[in-house]
Amino acid sequence: MLGGPEVLRVEEVPVPAPGVGEVLVEVHAGGLNFADTERRRGLYLASEPLPETSGFEGAGVVCALGPGVDAGWLQRRVAFTAPRAHAEYCAVPGGKLIALPDALDFVQAAAFPVQALTAWHVLHTLGRVTPRDVVLVHSAAGGVGQLLVQLAREAGATVIGSVSRDGKQPRVRALGAHHVLTRGPEFLAALQAVAPGGVTLLLEAVGAEVSKEVLPALAPLGRWVTYGSASGAPPPLELEALFEKSVTVSAFWLRTVMPPAVAEGAQGEVLARLLDGRLTQEVTRCALEEAPRVHRRLEAGLTTGKWVFTVR
Image (cartoon, rainbow, N blue to C red; front, side, top):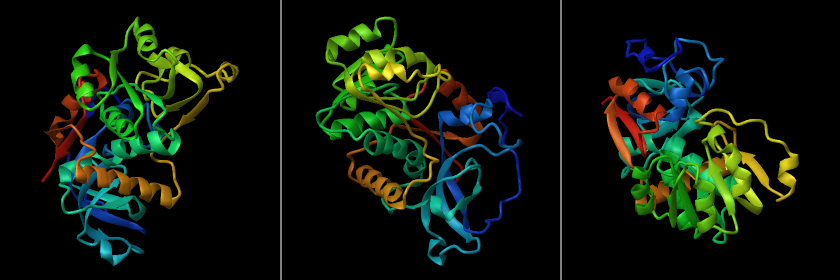
């Protein structure tokens, strides 16, 4: 059933059988995301039938193959994005597998598929960041936000991070943000002080709470990329409001089917940076049974970085 974190429970269910084009992954670790809380509340993929195993990403070892899958995947260490990932075994489409280098452990591997790939595409594929950009990253202490700060700084842009609480500012500064601001009544005035010409690239997954601030914050010819609505859906956008500054608006969802070169290119870029240390993830480990507690913290905005459960 849908509801609060208390509806989550750990149960024994049959091991899934991989279908055509799928593999069975013996899951070692899985990532917890804000989207998991939205699914539980009926705000995300609401048409999917219940009860259902939660989760959208994990890492483990391929232990069985369905028809039509390359035999070379058997016994490979992989990360993946797929539904029903919060389990000991998960049936995963072959196209959603990411082969893991030996240097990346399962906890690190389970932490990056949703958030790091989203950050890469938001900043590079859609945002097309350049060293000339002034980038505003909302929720900069969150899992995607921390990655966006690092990637934007690496790209040579001026980086401004926003956080919901003053206590989150030090973490964002340590990641390389040039300025960190706490959202509140004086936010736009503070932003004007550090970016008097406005921001050229605004990245957010907050939704309703920042919707009125987006256009005033943008510079002429600015770009706004949204990739979620954690605080609720924003009001409808009036296209007429975009004309004055000639603003570009775009949205990103990792489930979008992208050209293989784009998807695989992002995977390679992210993995290379995780391996050589240019990109780091703040990871907190937990047991799968702790999911209700983690959900509560995610919804209350009390977390930073990424939460990963381990099952082996």
